[in-house]
Length: 365
Image 1 (cartoon, helix red, strand yellow):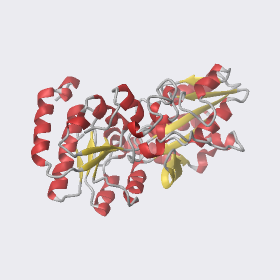
Image 2: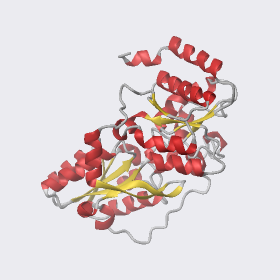
Image 3: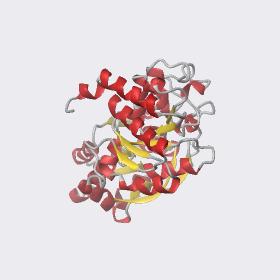
């Protein structure tokens, strides 16, 4: 298959669903760890077409959603300072902080810019040497190479007015944290193809072996997901727990060696707090000491932060799969895409946004 439409072929989708119904003998629970996959599952209604009792659990796969509230509050405090330009991807601008969001801050006069690449932020620093340019560097392993390259390029240019506020998170530690929870009912995982295109599949092998849980690296189109679910169910039904690669057209076991090398050169593994989940050891990336001069958190110290989540927001339960958006009393009423209480309703990969866009008002059968 070469073209996008072929990954959405309804006849092939029906055949995969029929094979899934023939294969599944139990109501398995499978978690997809990618917000893009969540949106496809919900938009296409795949989660409602699965065999009776089988459940897709929506995991913490949205990088915007898991960015800690403290990081957002720090970004806004820095952006409000004179002489500072804060650059960010657009979906971060409407994520609620403790008191406001970056878009509202821009409306009040702060210099907050939307960029489509961290290299655009480096270019802003080159064009405006009289301003401090701070790039809000968030995301999973997928965005880490580009952000690392931006820091490396700024270093080679000798820029002194560029820095990054880093909030990178790593997928495998989040998966192990979920599996360590005694209340976790997840029996298999669909791993995100774009993450594995960078990091490869090998990091998941110890998790599959230790927890005896199948992990299938999967793409993002309907047929990718249906085939990935079928592969996971076949493992579950036969008692296997391996890492399989459905997304072979883009993912290799060792990932992208060049990209991983750049990430390892600029970043090191560190503890990280996840929004709604809390601190997870060795679950993030931070700048190495030799690049500390580009660390916005060190350069623009912000004191007396008191992050405060909206008490009605169930983001933590939704991000861990313990609740669905429709379980939240604020969903679709106090919390909408235009007036969100939490990040999952804002982001293009948020579970609440996926349910709201699909008009969901109840749990899948």
